[in-house]
Image (cartoon, rainbow, N blue to C red; front, side, top):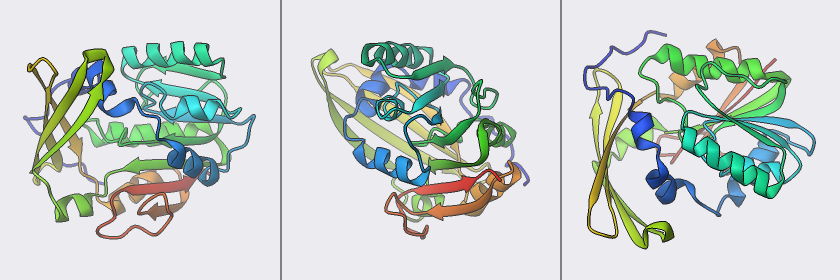
Amino acid sequence: MDAPPAHADYPENWTAALYDDLLADVMLRRDDVAAELAFLTETLRLRPGMRVLDQGCGIGSLALPLAATGIALFGIDQAAGYVAEARAEAARRNVDATFVCGDTARIVPPAPVHGAFSWWTSWGHAAACEDNLATLRRAFDALVPGGLFALDTMNVCGVLRGFAAETTLRRTVPRLGGAVTLHRTSRVDLPSGLLHKVWTFRLPDGSEVQRLSAMRLYLPWQVAAMLAAAGFVDIRLLGSMAGEPLAMDSGRLIAVARRP
C-alpha cells in the first residue's frame, strides 16, 4: 500500500506532550469499562490463565480489570508516567500485569500471548505508515497460532461524513479541585491523509493548556489491507461492540483478525 505523502505540519513528538496526567484525568480514568471487558473477553475467547497483550495500554484502564479476572496482562505504552501508574496499581491490586514503556512497533512480550488488543484509538499515531504497520506486525508476532487480535480505531467514513470541526466535553477532576473543559478543534488535510487537532484544556483556575495531535486517516479497506500485510487472516470489520458489520455511519471501526 502506498504511503500518504509526508507533511510539514505533522507536530514532532506530539504524543509525549499530549499523553500526560491532564489527559489521563479527563479521558482515561474511568470505571465504566464493563462493556469493553465483556466484548474483549468474548471476542478474543479469553479464559483465566491466558496471556494477553494490550498495545497502548495507557494507565491500565482495561488491562488491570482484565488481569483481575485471572488473565496475565502485558501492556506497552510510550508514556512513562502512565506505565509507572499502571505498575503501581497492579501492585496495589496484586494482579498478574506487567507494564513496559516503549514503542509498540518494536516490542513483543517475552512469552507468546493468546490474545491481543489495541483500544481507544491507540493505533495510528505514527507519522510513517510503515511504523503503524509495524505495530500490527508486532501484535501478530506476539500471538500464538490461532490467537485473535482486536483493533479499535476511527471509522474514517463516518468521521468525514459527519465531520465536526469543534467538540467540547467537561470532566470533574478531583485532583485539580473542579471541572476541566476540553475543547477540540479539528482540521482534515486530505492530500496528506491527516486529521489535525488542537486540544485546549481549560482548568478550574481559569488557565488554559494547549496540545496538538495528528492522526493518519485510514479508510476501512486500508485497515484491512494492513492487517493482511501483517499476516492476519479472517479479518472482520465491525461497527461497534454490538458486533454488527461496519457501515458508513458506524461510530467506530473495530477490526478482529486471527493469526493462522
